[in-house]
Length: 118
Image (cartoon, rainbow, N blue to C red; front, top):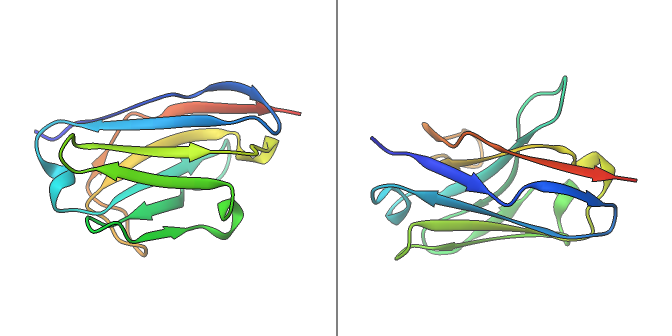
C-alpha cells in the first residue's frame, strides 16, 4: 500500500519561508506526477504546484515566483519551497501522487499545517 507523508509545516510570519517535504513508500514517485495541494478552512482543496517525472513544473498563479516544487525520484521524495509567505497561504498542505493538472491522483498524504501570521 502506497503511503505519503508530509512534514515541514509550522507557524511563520509573513515574508518568511518554509520547506515542505513528502516521502513516499514504495516506488510510486518513480513514474507519476507529484503535486502539492492546499485546503484552507471553509474552502475547497486546490492545486498549488505539480511536477512530472521528467521535471516539468506547473504552478498556480497565486504562488508563481514564490514557491518552487522539486523531486528526487531515486529517493521517492518531493519538496515544496515556499518563500515570501502571506497570511492567505495559511492552509493544510497535502502531497499527492498520480494526478495531472486537471485531476488529483489517488494517493494522498495526511497533510501538514502551514500558518502564516501577519
